Structures are given as structure tokens and as C-alpha cells.
Image (cartoon, rainbow, N blue to C red; front, side, top):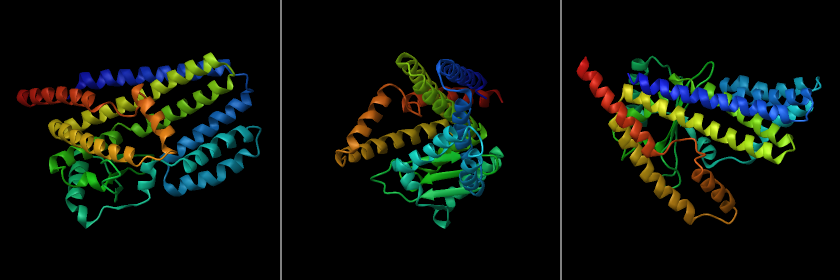
Length: 318
């Protein structure tokens, strides 16, 4: 079902990856850095992005061992600068969402209806979820959210507690869960790791080119490509959800998320401190340029409406 949309979106995704690879090659040709330095930088980025594909114990072991192994080679300094630098950057600049994840817990009896929904979709889609977690969040501070993560071993789902409550009904929650399963089915974690690796590598090499035109051209290009891939992943996950749940229910759920998010955003603006303003301005600027991970709700709904029409036509044919 929806084959034409699927192949169109996949073609766009391949094109954006081509743009990212071309941008990386362009900056590589314009950097005066020694080949071993470039190798150390790229290996450091690659090792960092590999962490999220591994189980927590192996990921923690890699954090400890990788910098020590690199010390015995000529690539030690650039490798460790990148690998440890990215880890430090994410520790020092945690997002609001990252703070909420500290409160996550396994879904329990209070979420039995939601667990049943997930298990039914697991059987229907043949996707196994090893971890089902919920984050108890303050509904005034956080918009409803859900995410899926996959790797070489485990698949997991995470839900903010407010997305499992009213005003979301059972059909809407089923559609939202199906969307997250779509990310796992489409192996978006691989495209996320690959695009993240290309993004950071290109940005650093562009900066190291010591040429303002090269840095601006490559940096802007790779930014649009990175977010373009992310947005296509969301549209493909919506398509998967439309196949296994109601497209209308997902549209209704997205509208509710948008309305609640507007209220939360307004609360954030009212409580914004002087230190928050630069970051807030930067995020608004990126949003205006279209540099966001998700397409607008209106764009997603336009695709979902097309899926709804095709789904009804397919049902009538059968």
C-alpha cells in the first residue's frame, strides 16, 4: 500500500544522502589537514555515533576503552578531541527533553491498556520491543512526546506520560505507537547515525578548511540535507502508521499535540530568563529556515490524507 509515496520519499532520501556525501567530499578536498588527522577526526565521529546502536553495557565499555586504544596511534589527538569532545558537549548542554529522560521507568499496571496496544501492534507488525518506558513529566512544562530507538540488539519505546492520558483516545494512541514502530521498521536509527556522522564530519572539515566561502556553503548544504533526511523519516513512519492504524486518528492526535505544544511554548516564553534568550532566538531562526527534524503538522496531514484515500480505495478493491 502507498507504494508510489514510499518510493518517492525513498528517492528523496537517497538524494539528500548524495548531497551530504558530496558536501563531505567537497570539504575534504579543501582542507589542508594531514590525512592522518582527517582519519582521526572521522573515526572519532564514527565511534561516537556507533554508541547509540549498542546495548548500554557495551556502549559504556566503548566509552572507556576507545580513547585508550587511540593513544597508541598517530590519530590519537584528533580522535580523542572529537570522541570525548562530543560526549562532553552533550553532557554540558543537555536539552530539556534529556532532563525528562532521567525520570523514565518501565511501563506498569497504570499503563496496562497502552501496553496491550503495543503488544497487539507488535504481533501485527512482527516487531519486537524489548523495553517499553514512560517518563512522568510535568504537563505544563513538556509537550506530549514519544520516541523509538533501535540498534543491533534491542528496540525500545519511550512515551511522555501526558501522551498516554486524555485528551488522547485509544485510536489516537494506537496510531502514535504505530508511528514509532514505523521508525524501527524502517531502521531509521541507521540513517540517523549515518547522517549524524556526515553532518558533524562535514562541519568540522569545513571549519578546518580556513575558507569562509567553503565553510558557509558546505555548512548550510549539510544542514539542509541532515534535516531533510530527518523529515522524510517522519513522513515514512507516518505512512507505516497509516497502514497499521487509522490515518484520521493520527491526524487528530497530531492536532492535539500541536495545540498542547503551543500552550507549553507560551509558558516557556513567560518563564524565559536572560540566559535562555540567545538559545531561544537561535532555535526560532532555525525554524524559520526550515532546519527542523519534523515536517510541519500541515505537511504531515496532507500526506496522511493521501494515505487515507489510497487505503480506502485498496479496501474497496479487496
